[in-house]
Length: 404
Image 1 (cartoon, helix red, strand yellow):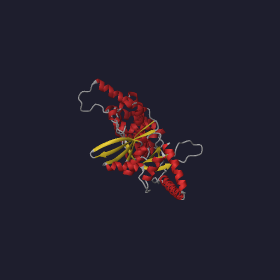
Image 2 (cartoon, rainbow, N blue to C red; image 1 turned 180 degrees about the vertical axis):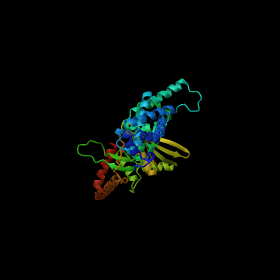
Image 3 (tube, rainbow, N blue to C red; image 1 turned 60 degrees about the horizontal axis):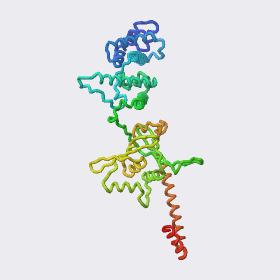
Image 4 (cartoon, rainbow, N blue to C red; image 1 turned 60 degrees about the vertical axis):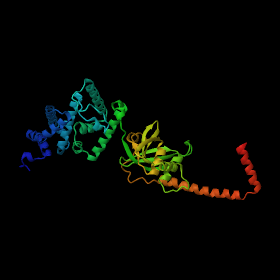
């Protein structure tokens, strides 16, 4: 290996030689990566001359810091990190931003002046500068890890694979961190600066969900919860999230029955509503859980009547019951799923929901009906065994209660 030409040596071998004072070795490293470093810097600042200066500064810092490089084989990604820090310091000093607001916020439209306009008024320019300042401050308010991932992806416009190499983490982790950083940035902007999104242009991101289960809450001794509370558990399979919605016993049982093969001898209330809609040729198309205000969920039922689409406000429990009976999809606003009521499912949890809660509720309803039939037979038997005198006396008491 001693006779190997210098140019064929690996990064690790060149680093080792450079550490021993071989300037030619570091010169080769510079030749290998100065173009990449300059392009990397150019993505940040958009200026060719400035990018060249920043790349040279980063290479100088790398040369002076070679002793702190733990793994010489990772010289390339280590150099990327130095270029990133140099560029970030440059941007911070000059307070410049170059990223796309719409891209970062995942579809939130800000509607700046179109690029084809030939005249930009001073007022419009001032508005856009203020808008960029707001987002820049929000980015700086993120944690160091979230801020770095935003800078790399949106400022430098690196690919996921390039960020993977630079940060030395799996690409799946890059995706997770980027999603998390974007959601946190979006939340900050929506909470602190909702005025930057025109009200008439705001669109809710709706997430399709299914019903994971219906659970009857068993009250413990000393609890004072009125009635028999039930929980409808909505399931976002793609995002691995759950959303529990508390409802009354009547609604909880109705939804559980709709999810099962249980047959009621007479139509239940929501079945009656559904039949009414079908009788007048109205189809339930979708149910949306659109908002959460003061711990109360709000829903909208989207229905089609001929060519006309109408939306009717509803309680989530009624909307979900109609969705179940009409095989209509259910959607939840992303902002509702992101509230404290939303529950992230750990990666360790595998498989699909088993709806054991529904099964338990149906078994209880079936047992109550069986007991009711037994009790009804006993009452009929007692009624048939009464004497005529008892019947006359009972009828007189009934008339007195109704008319006196």
